[in-house]
Image: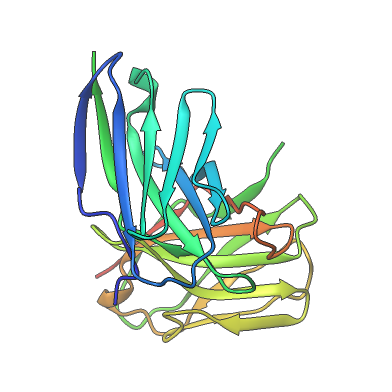
Length: 111
Length: 114
């Protein structure tokens, strides 16, 4: 039972354009969401997060949007750079429970 | 700034062999975790610990054991390796389990059981 789903295994975007990575969840009790970025042969690193009381959080080129009614969140990267090429995991949790990860989306930025 | 260190990075085991994956963190974090990542799948929690002497099962604990004798170390033990345990294993730590606390991950151990 995959409670956090990333339906696009891969995404290719031209350098300088916007990258949009999507994530859907089924558990309406989740109230905190995170995005992690993973390069090959490295562990995931934290990128950005959002709590359920917000619908948007911005950090430089990265913005996460949360639509609670649709149980959907997205990560926008503007402008996309070659160094953004990586696998992106979304994750969700309830208070006092552990993170549940999605399956990941491999983003490739085309120079 | 070591963070979370895992050893070894790669290992090939024969069916039935045993091994210990080592994990140590130097951030004085209370919480530590072991995840596995199978191809095309997200990270699945194997075991976690909320402090020295305390461990608990995650989603996929079968075939594994852990111990937490110190704050720094959280080894994962495979007693009888099986092909289904072929995976990439990640150790992580976090300061606590509050909502806005990120987890820091090690570089991973790629394990193949043949």
